[in-house]
Image (cartoon, rainbow, N blue to C red; front, side, top):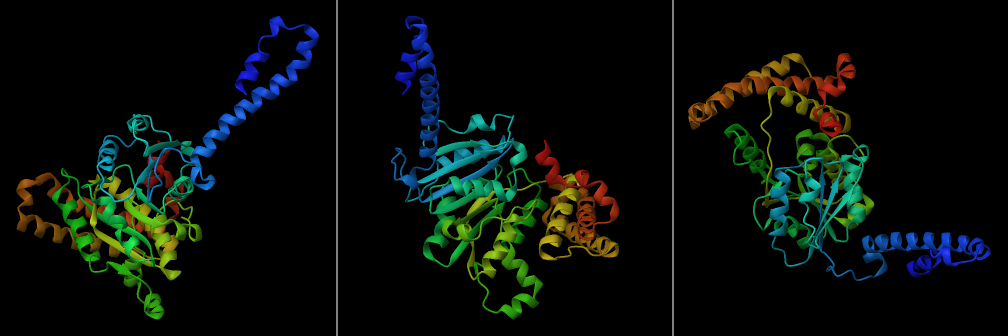
Amino acid sequence: MQRIADQFNARRHTPRRCQERIAPCQRRAEALTHSFRGSAAYLTAHAEEFGIYTGVEQPLVSVIIPVKNGLPHFRRVLDMLKKQKLDAPFEVIVIDSGSSDGSKEAVPGDDPRFRIVEIPASSFGHGKTRNLGVELSRGEYCAFLTHDAVPADEHWLRELVRPLREDETVAGVFGRHIAYENATPFTRWELETHFEGLKNWPKVKITDAREYVRNQGLRQVYHFYSDNSSCMRKSVWRELPYPDVDFAEDQLWAKKAVEAGYTKAFAYDSVVYHSHDYSPWERLQRSYDEARALNELFGYQLCATKGNAFRQAWRTSGRDVMLAWRNGWLWRAPFASLMRPADNLARQIGYYLGTKRPRFTERHERALSRDRQLHAQ
């Protein structure tokens, strides 16, 4: 088709009357050439649907990573993905929503397992961007990472998909988080305590509907799910795609999955480095986002009164003082130890504001929401 267009370009050797007759044909040829090029790209992206061999093995797992300005952690994520040991092929789909720090260029162009999709920043949504990744995927299972969740070893993916391969009733799996090497001991302790508790619940499925409805603590265990490191069965996603919400799309999806009769699993041996040491203001913002979403989507009240906020801040600060004393953190991490009361108070204020939503929060939503600020950058 390009050859035809090139031939028509030689107008200076063609009489005027012939040029007038040829011009419409030339425009049609150019349009067809452009169309064929677009079709080739479309067919490559949807090769599985059309039975076309692209030179890349059919993957068992598609790893989907939304990213925006993810360096330096994102480079480590990519390096560890290259090292994953799985007895089946896998692909990696990076969805970039406007990075300007070199994240796009970090995606390896010489590895056929990796591909990058670019979307406008205004198109990003926690749920809908992940849904896009699943739509573009070719794997039977779809794993998710955030751009700052670094697989801890080469077995992260193998252990993450294991529950799905061993039990067909499992709809989704989430993995364990551990703190970065430079995290404070308090952050490390919080993550270890949280996931050690979840170790008692390797699989959950609703067997007693009355107890599930009555027991909020039980529901919170059943709903907990983290897309920092997770994997779902694509056939279940077709029935239950991610909801398009501002926050907690992962936990809302888990709620719908278990209430639809599926099993949710926790892969303790699938581990990523993922942690944050927030300033007091960042802690307040993060807690505000969390409490607002959990209240709106699940009806949870993380902090219902001002008095409860101060009591919880006092209690957790006393706990942290004891931890720091017993473990020697007062000497090894003096600044982090001194900042714990401020961190605990900021957390509870954020919980209260997100739960009760006083009138002034509506006017200052952008300032209070860390999630909105991050995606507005």
